Length: 110
Image 1: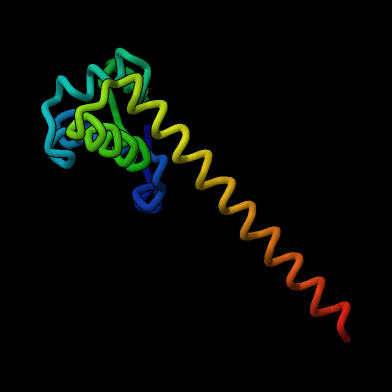
Image 2: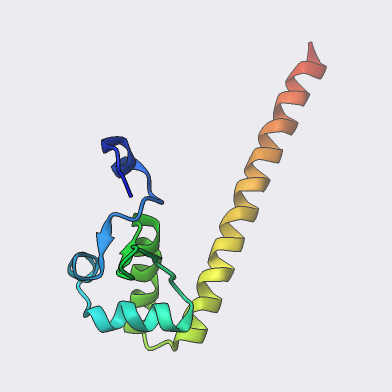
């Protein structure tokens, strides 16, 4: 895999080895392997089979870790995160629709 320097700005570029990812998150490598085994975070694999994580995956793993620290199980943490993400998407949609309606109201007043 030939990387360009611009790839490092891409949150979906698999730049982190398991060891580096664990260091960044402050977890053991086993934590990341367990998330992979459970299908919660699926890193890309090199031709040699080594895991490579993206910044987006690390952010998600950090959110899971935070919920673990609060005493939640993996299943509960994944459900909570799915609900949080769905709520954020709906709030974003609501904000865009309100902005569109506000723009239509201003045009109708002229």
